[in-house]
Length: 158
Image (cartoon, rainbow, N blue to C red; front, side, top):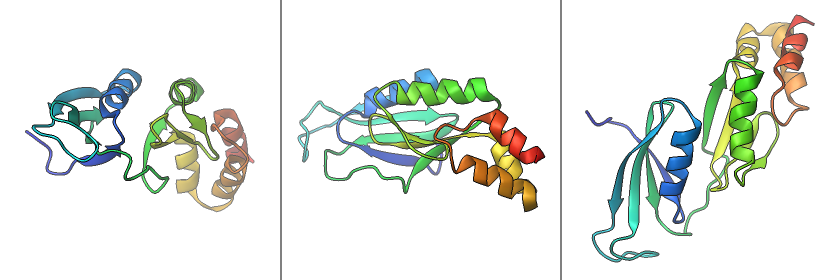
């Protein structure tokens, strides 16, 4: 059954390439449909890939090849929860080493401009704990690009 709510992500022209990358990189992710334009449209021609249906970690998405009219921004991001440093490194490195770029506090962008938060569960657990533990973990995170699990765990302990 098709989901009632689906995330639609605007790409210039590379929705299929992006969807294939996500499917190869993240578990429970796949490309489920590729649809060509039935006629010419602004920024494209009949037969071009217009939309791509895919999932990222089980979340249904549609990639729309809409042309260069709208750019991605940090106002939208995927947040991927990781269990350890190995998993954090794997996802971070996959995105950054595939033409992406690093940012601060666990954020990075893929080569299509889509923002990702690669967030170890220990960080979200520290924030949920509140108080001094959250403060220490938060302050440690503020100095990081990719989150370092050992440093967050040390900050949690004080």
